[in-house]
Amino acid sequence: MERIVKTSDGMYQSFLSSISAGPWKRLGLERRSGVAVPLFSVYSGRSIGVGELPDLKLLIDWCGKTGMSIIQFLPLNDVGFNFAPYDAQSSFALEPMYLAVDRLAKANIKPFKNEIESLRKTFAIPSPSPLPSGERVRGEGIKRVDYKIKAAKLDLLWKIFEKSKAEAGTPFMSYVEKNKWWLDDYALFKVIKEKEGERKWEDWPTEFKRRNFDVIGLFEKEHADRITFHKWLQWQLFEQFQDARKYARSKKVLFMGDLPFLASRDSADVWAHPRYFKLDLSSGAPPDAYFFKGQRWGTPPCDWEALRDGAYDYVIEKLKYASNFYDLLRMDHSVGFFRLWSIPLSEPIENAGLNGFFDPSDERIWEERGRSLFSLMVQNCKMLICGEDLGTVPECSFRVLEACAIPGMDIQRWMREPAQAYAFKPSEAYRRNSIAAISTHDMSSFNAWWEYEAGTVYGPLFERKLNAKGIDLDPVKHQLFDLDRSFHDRLRWRNEIKNVQSLVQIIGKPEHEMQDLIDLYLWSYGEKEKFWRYVGLPGCFDEKSSHDSVKASLEKIMGSASIFAVQLFQDWLALGDYFEGDSWDVRINFPGIASEKNWSFVMPISLEQLNVLSINKEIKAINKLAGRV
Image (cartoon, rainbow, N blue to C red; front, side, top):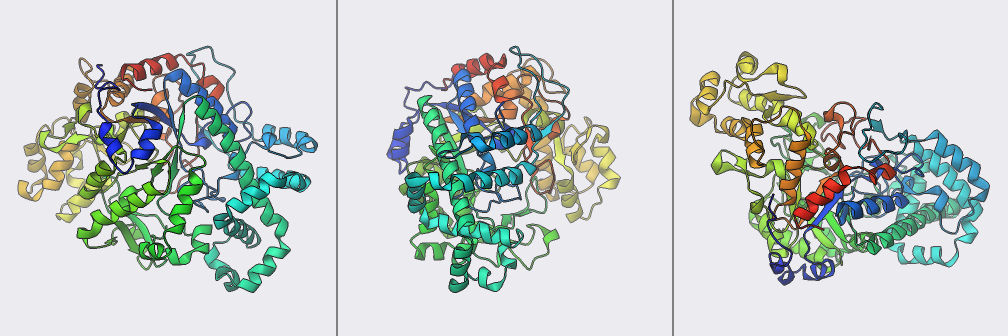
């Protein structure tokens, strides 16, 4: 592989003439490499049940050994007991289970040494003995987070707080004072929720739901210690995160946060500021190639007119607090800043996102609205704003992100040329203002894509499109697809369907009535052959993913024109042989379904082991060849 650019050739100089010039000057215009990883998926020898903030130091060390300088997180906000990071109870507060109980600030933990060790033993994360560099880790199966750890940690933290609250002193009080805008409401919300058996706030008694001043004041007095406890937890999280970030800066590693575009309906944000949300609607996404009914997320859309009337205080305060922890900030579902797919709550749940609408409906105002909102964010924080511009993306989004020098996302398997039978786009055609990735947390890893998805169509979508034309799938299914090689609702084309004419003949409709089906066919048929040629591998493609195909994919994405290239930890580790079980399950989230497999995946190796893997040198060589740091 040849390097596409050198860092000194001025390829990204135009970024310094944009509204994002300030953040770019602070970060520099280096081509950077990174890893995307949920904190719940990693662990160290000192972790208690789940990854903890001090564990990030070991991840930072690994970045140094592999030539990376970005760690991208999933949202780290307090999820309550729902454990879905994009449905958090606060857009400000961090998740308490990520605290290292044995490393609390100004806390007397000596009386609790035995309880801490008992907790560590009860929630031990099985891990093999230390690895000689490159040795396989097999035989343990896929690990999952035991989320009972949260309640157990909170019980112990409460005991420690009761013994230590007098020791917190001025640093704690200063933290509380600086963060009153959101912290008071959040802590109160948490305690009312506890007293109401974790019921949704919309199901609370009216005096709590509507925030009756007198009742709330009395409640605060009666539960002052418990309210202070939740503030103390956030201060402890602040201190441990700040310590990790200080270490990252010393190693020249950047933290990229992930700020959910929308607040959970059952959150302190919505309870405290209901006027800022359209509570009669649910946000979501329209039908597409992956979700034939679209999506319904349950989160209420923002009321941007009300936010404007409030001088955007809610948005600005969120950015202000996030800047304590991150150098870059990924704005989840950034296409929603232009227009948001909105679904009336009266719409049956089973219809998902089918009968929604874009808000605002006037396409002529989308571009200016998005430009204004992105400008607002850029002007009110020092972090580099990045956009998750995936899904159904309006054309104006690309123009605004380019003009503002805001990196979007270019996903390798989706970078295609419609005019060339959906061939893969050359790496130099990736957007310069983008984060190039093989996959995201909502997608299959490279291994699973190669084994189950490449060369297939999504069965429910294909069937729905046939039904719309008055055709039943069953009579033609065996003629079109190799069902013995089709899994997970993915239909693999039979080798005999070599051209559009074969497809048209079997379905029996005029070609001009089948353009949507033809597009699905052209996108997916021969996909493995196209990719094999794209990455420059010789001979016929391998049916199963291999070291060579993973490495070629990584080299190609790292060599792209994108200023950043950040890969999921699963795709980096795919260079070795570390995962047990079905590659389909080596995944962080299966969107659109409720599953115990979502948000629970744990790495097969500890962070200590990660730092001695033989593939680390190979990863560093890939980054060096691509001119990335």
